[in-house]
Length: 155
Image (tube, rainbow, N blue to C red; front, side, top):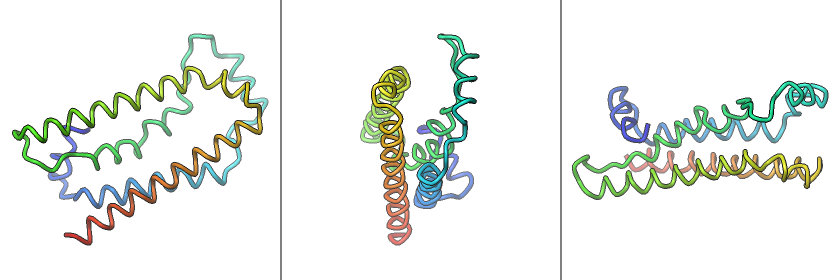
């Protein structure tokens, strides 16, 4: 999406500020739901899922939140504005790609070791971390919307 995203936006006639606003609203909505909703699975359902999963199974329950439409919208907002043949554009692509790789490594490490950390924190710690994460996501959504509004006002 990072490389082809700019061309896709031009094909559909969508500006980056509009994508920022839409992506920010999507993140805001996701975070708001995380802050205000009860868990989707009861304790019994969670235990049943754990018993059916093998130690090497991967259950993509959290993947829509991690790599869903909000992630795509955020990636589209980072598309460099320069000409494709300019070295500065390629340095920007490289920097953003390194950031995406670092985020992917962070997500991997979090998913890999989250069960151990959550067990140590207990139920109250788990809920606290969940609410803090949702609030940070909410703030990121507001920031992206604000940047989109500023971009539209400059046009």
